[in-house]
Image 1: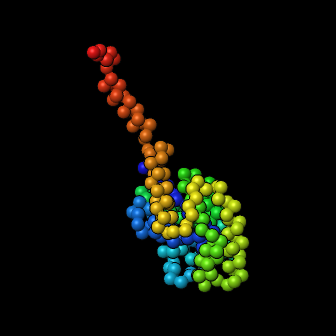
Image 2: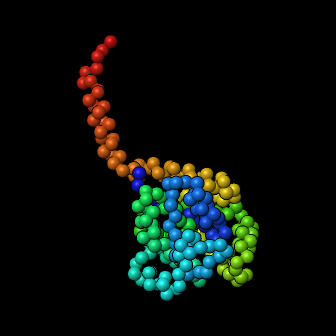
Image 3: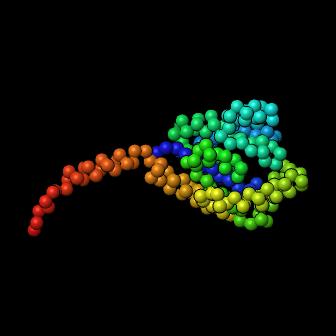
Length: 215
């Protein structure tokens, strides 16, 4: 089986980061591609674990060198996924799980068309607002910008293969895990399927008598 990227997108406060961390904690077949950002760390976030926190100049240098599989400016900050990070996880035989925004997902699929796209919907606008306000890490103006962006991001749901309503974390996790399991055995992802089928057919042909005995 060839590993593939799993992209989780959602409006800010939609729970994509929480769900990604749950997948990583519970599944040994999934690895994380640590993204780069120019925003400041929040709370207990650590450089190299949650994000690679870069200066704007350092980020732009990597972008101009073609190092990113995707990059975007979101709420005034730059975000991007390094190709080297993705390939590093693939090299261990694991799928790559990423929580990236709609802009980034569009670009990423151009580089990795085998990606599985999952959009997480909040159960209601009230819940989304409550989650954003509960962070207490941003100004009222920044929160308003995120709400405006959320409205626009919801219009991109049709570009995703799967939609999961994140009204209950365990249920949402179960649905995403089921999607991963199903995608892993998709015909196109299994190496040498055609060769294996031909081998089975050849074996059956040898076992089938040319003139079956009559009773």
